[in-house]
Image 1 (spheres, rainbow, N blue to C red):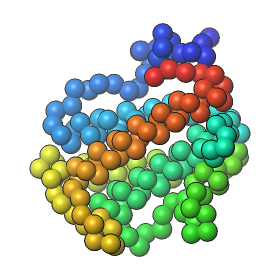
Image 2: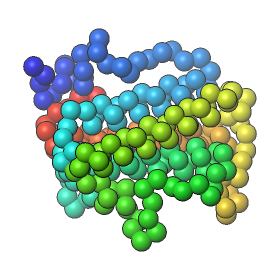
Image 3: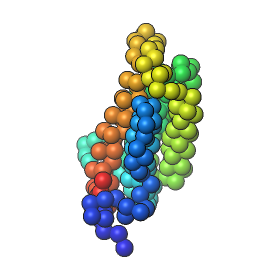
Length: 187
Protein backbone atom coordinates (compact mmCIF):
# COMPACT_ATOMS: atom_id res chain seq x y z
CA UNK A 1 0.00 0.00 0.00
CA UNK A 2 1.28 3.45 -0.88
CA UNK A 3 1.58 6.19 1.66
CA UNK A 4 -0.07 9.53 0.93
CA UNK A 5 3.37 11.07 1.46
CA UNK A 6 5.00 8.86 -1.15
CA UNK A 7 8.09 6.73 -0.84
CA UNK A 8 10.71 8.40 1.35
CA UNK A 9 9.63 11.72 -0.12
CA UNK A 10 9.46 10.39 -3.67
CA UNK A 11 6.35 9.97 -5.78
CA UNK A 12 7.14 6.35 -6.71
CA UNK A 13 9.65 3.74 -5.64
CA UNK A 14 12.91 4.48 -7.46
CA UNK A 15 12.68 1.29 -9.53
CA UNK A 16 9.22 2.26 -10.82
CA UNK A 17 9.84 5.92 -11.64
CA UNK A 18 9.87 6.47 -15.44
CA UNK A 19 11.75 9.73 -15.06
CA UNK A 20 15.48 9.41 -15.19
CA UNK A 21 18.67 11.34 -15.50
CA UNK A 22 19.96 10.06 -18.80
CA UNK A 23 23.11 12.18 -18.64
CA UNK A 24 22.25 13.99 -21.88
CA UNK A 25 25.07 15.16 -24.07
CA UNK A 26 24.59 18.51 -25.77
CA UNK A 27 22.21 21.41 -25.49
CA UNK A 28 19.28 19.96 -27.42
CA UNK A 29 19.49 16.62 -25.62
CA UNK A 30 19.40 18.48 -22.30
CA UNK A 31 16.25 20.39 -23.23
CA UNK A 32 14.58 17.22 -24.49
CA UNK A 33 15.48 15.36 -21.27
CA UNK A 34 14.06 18.11 -19.05
CA UNK A 35 10.90 18.36 -21.13
CA UNK A 36 10.44 14.58 -21.06
CA UNK A 37 10.80 14.44 -17.28
CA UNK A 38 8.47 17.37 -16.63
CA UNK A 39 5.86 15.98 -19.00
CA UNK A 40 6.05 12.66 -17.16
CA UNK A 41 5.81 14.47 -13.82
CA UNK A 42 2.55 16.16 -14.83
CA UNK A 43 1.18 12.85 -16.07
CA UNK A 44 2.17 11.10 -12.83
CA UNK A 45 0.51 13.81 -10.72
CA UNK A 46 -2.74 13.06 -12.58
CA UNK A 47 -2.50 9.27 -12.31
CA UNK A 48 -5.08 7.18 -10.47
CA UNK A 49 -7.62 9.98 -10.03
CA UNK A 50 -11.25 10.02 -11.13
CA UNK A 51 -12.45 12.54 -13.71
CA UNK A 52 -14.12 14.47 -10.89
CA UNK A 53 -10.90 14.62 -8.89
CA UNK A 54 -8.89 15.71 -11.94
CA UNK A 55 -11.36 18.55 -12.56
CA UNK A 56 -11.39 19.70 -8.92
CA UNK A 57 -10.31 23.31 -8.53
CA UNK A 58 -8.63 22.55 -5.24
CA UNK A 59 -7.21 25.94 -4.28
CA UNK A 60 -10.05 28.51 -4.24
CA UNK A 61 -10.52 31.11 -5.56
CA UNK A 62 -8.27 29.83 -8.35
CA UNK A 63 -9.85 27.80 -11.14
CA UNK A 64 -6.68 25.69 -11.52
CA UNK A 65 -7.22 21.96 -11.66
CA UNK A 66 -5.02 19.07 -12.72
CA UNK A 67 -7.23 18.53 -15.77
CA UNK A 68 -7.07 22.23 -16.55
CA UNK A 69 -3.27 22.07 -16.39
CA UNK A 70 -3.23 19.21 -18.91
CA UNK A 71 -5.49 21.20 -21.22
CA UNK A 72 -3.37 24.31 -20.69
CA UNK A 73 -0.15 22.46 -21.51
CA UNK A 74 -1.71 21.09 -24.71
CA UNK A 75 -2.38 24.70 -25.65
CA UNK A 76 1.13 25.81 -24.63
CA UNK A 77 2.80 22.97 -26.56
CA UNK A 78 0.78 23.93 -29.63
CA UNK A 79 1.43 27.66 -29.28
CA UNK A 80 5.19 27.37 -29.01
CA UNK A 81 5.99 24.33 -31.14
CA UNK A 82 3.41 24.72 -33.88
CA UNK A 83 2.76 28.44 -34.05
CA UNK A 84 6.03 30.02 -32.90
CA UNK A 85 8.64 27.50 -34.02
CA UNK A 86 6.96 26.24 -37.19
CA UNK A 87 4.83 29.20 -38.21
CA UNK A 88 1.51 27.32 -38.28
CA UNK A 89 -0.42 30.46 -37.36
CA UNK A 90 -3.66 29.48 -39.09
CA UNK A 91 -3.98 26.12 -37.37
CA UNK A 92 -6.79 25.99 -34.78
CA UNK A 93 -5.52 26.17 -31.21
CA UNK A 94 -6.66 23.49 -28.78
CA UNK A 95 -8.85 24.63 -25.91
CA UNK A 96 -9.25 28.14 -27.21
CA UNK A 97 -12.34 30.34 -27.09
CA UNK A 98 -12.24 34.10 -27.77
CA UNK A 99 -15.15 34.56 -25.35
CA UNK A 100 -13.38 32.73 -22.51
CA UNK A 101 -9.62 33.24 -22.33
CA UNK A 102 -9.43 30.67 -19.48
CA UNK A 103 -11.39 27.95 -21.31
CA UNK A 104 -8.63 25.42 -20.72
CA UNK A 105 -9.46 25.71 -17.01
CA UNK A 106 -13.14 26.71 -17.00
CA UNK A 107 -13.97 23.99 -19.54
CA UNK A 108 -12.22 21.24 -17.57
CA UNK A 109 -15.22 19.26 -16.36
CA UNK A 110 -15.21 15.97 -14.49
CA UNK A 111 -16.29 13.63 -17.27
CA UNK A 112 -14.34 10.78 -18.81
CA UNK A 113 -14.91 12.32 -22.24
CA UNK A 114 -13.28 15.59 -21.14
CA UNK A 115 -10.36 13.72 -19.54
CA UNK A 116 -9.82 11.57 -22.64
CA UNK A 117 -9.94 14.60 -24.93
CA UNK A 118 -7.50 16.56 -22.76
CA UNK A 119 -4.94 13.77 -22.59
CA UNK A 120 -5.35 12.93 -26.29
CA UNK A 121 -4.81 16.56 -27.29
CA UNK A 122 -1.85 16.97 -24.93
CA UNK A 123 -0.12 13.78 -26.08
CA UNK A 124 -0.76 14.66 -29.72
CA UNK A 125 0.89 18.04 -29.24
CA UNK A 126 3.83 16.43 -27.42
CA UNK A 127 4.30 13.93 -30.26
CA UNK A 128 4.26 16.75 -32.82
CA UNK A 129 6.78 18.72 -30.75
CA UNK A 130 9.02 15.68 -30.45
CA UNK A 131 8.83 15.08 -34.20
CA UNK A 132 10.03 18.63 -34.77
CA UNK A 133 12.73 18.40 -32.08
CA UNK A 134 14.01 15.19 -33.66
CA UNK A 135 14.91 17.21 -36.77
CA UNK A 136 16.87 19.82 -34.81
CA UNK A 137 20.51 19.98 -33.71
CA UNK A 138 22.60 21.83 -31.15
CA UNK A 139 23.50 24.27 -33.92
CA UNK A 140 19.84 25.14 -34.55
CA UNK A 141 19.37 26.32 -30.93
CA UNK A 142 20.76 29.76 -31.80
CA UNK A 143 18.47 30.17 -34.82
CA UNK A 144 16.61 33.44 -34.54
CA UNK A 145 13.03 33.49 -35.72
CA UNK A 146 9.94 35.68 -35.82
CA UNK A 147 7.55 33.98 -33.46
CA UNK A 148 4.29 35.88 -33.82
CA UNK A 149 2.32 38.11 -36.15
CA UNK A 150 3.65 41.15 -34.27
CA UNK A 151 7.14 40.51 -35.62
CA UNK A 152 8.78 39.71 -32.28
CA UNK A 153 11.97 37.68 -32.54
CA UNK A 154 13.62 35.13 -30.30
CA UNK A 155 15.78 32.04 -30.62
CA UNK A 156 14.85 28.38 -30.60
CA UNK A 157 16.91 28.14 -27.39
CA UNK A 158 14.79 30.79 -25.67
CA UNK A 159 11.58 29.00 -26.56
CA UNK A 160 12.84 25.63 -25.31
CA UNK A 161 14.04 27.19 -22.05
CA UNK A 162 10.63 28.83 -21.73
CA UNK A 163 8.94 25.43 -22.24
CA UNK A 164 11.04 23.91 -19.44
CA UNK A 165 10.15 26.90 -17.25
CA UNK A 166 6.44 26.56 -18.11
CA UNK A 167 6.40 22.88 -17.17
CA UNK A 168 8.40 23.45 -13.98
CA UNK A 169 5.98 26.15 -12.85
CA UNK A 170 2.89 24.09 -13.58
CA UNK A 171 4.33 20.90 -12.07
CA UNK A 172 4.68 22.94 -8.87
CA UNK A 173 0.99 23.80 -9.15
CA UNK A 174 0.25 20.12 -9.79
CA UNK A 175 2.08 19.16 -6.58
CA UNK A 176 -0.19 21.41 -4.53
CA UNK A 177 -3.36 20.48 -6.41
CA UNK A 178 -2.73 16.76 -5.99
CA UNK A 179 -2.03 17.15 -2.30
CA UNK A 180 -5.31 19.04 -1.89
CA UNK A 181 -7.24 16.38 -3.85
CA UNK A 182 -6.08 13.25 -2.04
CA UNK A 183 -3.14 14.12 0.22
CA UNK A 184 -0.52 12.42 -1.92
CA UNK A 185 2.84 14.15 -2.06
CA UNK A 186 6.30 13.45 -3.39
CA UNK A 187 8.76 14.94 -5.85
